[in-house]
Image 1 (cartoon, rainbow, N blue to C red):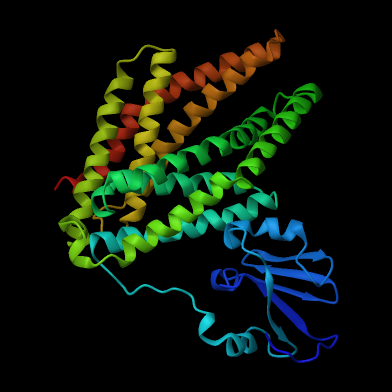
Image 2: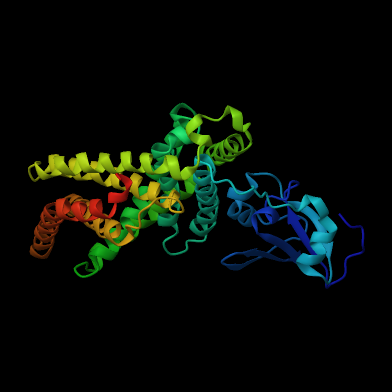
Length: 377
């Protein structure tokens, strides 16, 4: 750090010793007791002593710092980020990977993007930004999806299993907050003051659950495990990769994506024969899980897969999402244990929505499967 005497125009840059913030596109400065965190979504300000970052700010960037101490790394007057690059030199380096069109290379680009999205969503969740919990859940589900479908090119299921299990745990911690968010919006046409008060309590409890998870050691270990996995998969000698991982993505990924589509196909057939009730709900839930894996497989392999099924896939997933929302809504209404005629009518309406969605699934899947036809040819 520079020994230049500080003036009122100087800003002191804080970061971890390994510059985790700067190397992830975040800048933290303090000037005259005013702390400023520059993020891709805009600046965030705090007041406090210039000697150490405020605890609330340290907690905010935990996904990046991994609890490493924030320390002064540079002091600058004029010059901003350009001057900072000169001062920090080789320490300020964004990891870049060379282009790689192998099966592993293509999927790994997607994996890296989702690991970064998870950390970005963590910051948004802590700031209580709209849709942040959903973004975080989706990043985790995308990782689990590609780990499942493309395990052969990512080192095998044994390597990926523990990380996938921890991502599933994180999704479970985030789930109640997302469910309350969706159901509260769904209930607005009928919810009165009493119902809104119930939702407000549920939302507070769910947010507390999310923040406890994000502040815990288990979550920190998960983020570290994802980093280690990315390095292992990226830097292991190419001759140690499985044959499928080394082959061109265009020769490997279509077959693996096709296998994911076949699983959806077999599960849709089960829904068609399932009676209304818990059995059908389980069957549709299985379709929904398989469809998500297919969706993320298509996203990860988008640059090489010979299909563009986005509209049909969206329509299919909308049906599955609407069915699931109706299931959760009816469970919530039953838990309220009220006999109000309005809520009884809402319960009946939700049941009708579920029936409609389940009946439409086979046709929507046929439309989607037609769009995915090139995967089989």
